[in-house]
Length: 178
Image (cartoon, rainbow, N blue to C red):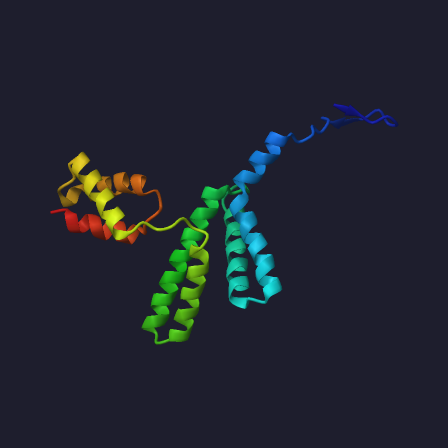
């Protein structure tokens, strides 16, 4: 502990300098949200209002996720990715609702925001890749009946690891189960 020279009071532990390794690991964990913040600055300077609005909403969603629950927590890149996936899903649902309500301009705006957000996510699997994984997992585990749907989805989602939309996976699994 550090002792104040004048009062003699204990002030707490001496702060240790951040080592190069600690600095590197801290920056690597939170790279995605920092990239989004940097891109927001670039969009602001370029006066790109759509990108600016979208990136601000992403940052707000990440901050909301950090303070939700019983305790505040920092999100790592996986947590930020989960927030981004939820935002993409929200944009897809909104675009579909606007299409159903004959608001094509608002649906197009939602789709443009969706494209911006998808730029921060890993590339989605092609249909061929997804079909191959579904076939392999279902054959390896012997999933053939509708009753196996839950177990099949769990096993396939473990393989897919978020690179495909859950609806696509579910539709493909349903089509293969008798």
